[in-house]
Length: 207
Image 1 (cartoon, rainbow, N blue to C red):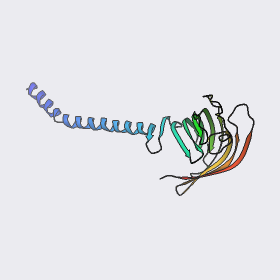
Image 2: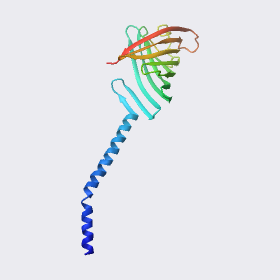
Image 3: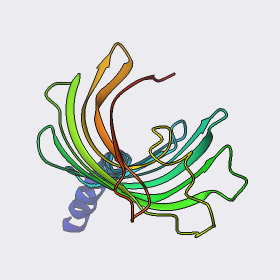
């Protein structure tokens, strides 16, 4: 009789085994789904903009992108940048950027200039539509050492990368991004003290 009672109890518990297995599978599925969403938040790549981001911490973000700009009848420049952004407080951002710059004048038959550059920027978002900032940027002299590579068409030309320091305000209005400020450009060659100050404005939108 004891054996029969034991078998009855065992069979009774076996009835709940499929339910337990289904519940366990659902639990693991939900955990895996949450981990997948978390990983997407931490790392991503935008095929449209070519921007790759990685956020190991909530207040630290690494960004990599390539910017290729063509100016008709003037030349082009291409920037490969690696940026680390730290947000120690809400709305306050500290960004350090470095990389390589390739640029060439339309009037030069020589190979493109190759430079190293770094940029440091501090910004504070007063609101979702208003963000003042300050920055400093340094462009090294050409590292490929081609004769005549530092020509007058690239020096102090706002259409190309320069060593500069400046401040400005960024804003967004109905999908349009507006940036205005003041900057002082210096000659990219290390032995020159020539500088030029100008007021600049930019208007852009996304499609």
